[in-house]
Length: 101
Image 1 (cartoon, rainbow, N blue to C red):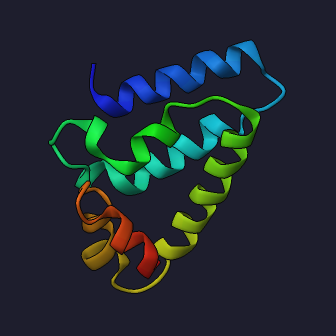
Image 2 (image 1 turned 120 degrees about the vertical axis):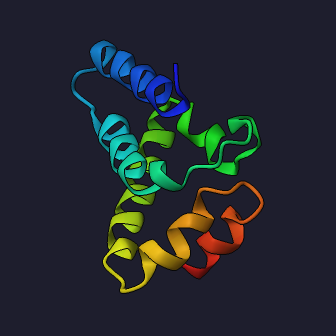
């Protein structure tokens, strides 16, 4: 199973357990749509975002929701998909690229 498939499956299972709160699942799907094409083939455990994607607490769902909304807003900026998005998918460049967003 691919990284993004497993993360989505995890959040789908969490949503089945708590159907009143789908923020985590919606956020992961949004982030996936923005970053998947440029996601590094390096082991996902090295990426700073991996830890956040794999948590299901209420606080983390809120963080994921906010992060996803920021990514969607940033994706509207001209040049984002050509310059910033590819760097967000790379573990070594993620934090610097996120700071630019």
